[in-house]
Image (spheres, rainbow, N blue to C red):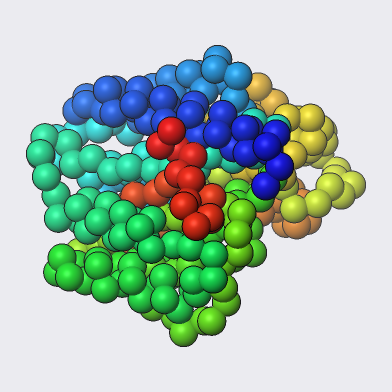
Length: 297
């Protein structure tokens, strides 16, 4: 990897780590999820980093893809299992990491299982290791704690301006012999659950991503498309980031048009199928004989 690219990955990772530290301090019962997300995102932007995606704050049986809506009133409470997933980038080179907290509890078996599996992955990952080996490792560590991996969620490769690349490392074992390559960048995330281990799409959709620009009819749709091309490019963005585009009704109609014309891809919240609790742990890893964890510098 070129030194200037490695430097940017490390810069994004450093800001990501600092944002996680801030998030941990802010996580308390009574805090509004909207206030939490906006404070974390403001910190990231003020520290010379872009947002690789909206801060995800997913509670309890929601595994991922929940970010607060405009005027969201959702509030943290004692006992909530909170996942905070943070994305930063410098010139499109991404730092992607996540942690979980059980509010009011010092320990939680789901969190420990996710963190232990991620640690074993980091100890093991090297160029030449296969998806087969690594997915089996994650599953074995998770199930040794008496809980389940979320089998239809996975770690993923990361590329410039692309949060989810082509490589996938599922949380449950798959016999795929694809080998990891030197300098490959991974957003390795482990999800654990007390449920059956499958997530399904829920609602409402609050996160979107550009697929390809196309002609659109509505004025608000054109404004959204211009904003995406100027600010977000191929990175995911939040519905609440568009609150100045127009009225709530106009915004909703515009998003509906953009999705129907396949201009935008939707990321609905992912809920555990049997409503089991879900925990998450993630770091960004550069695959080398001595891996670099950019989000832990």
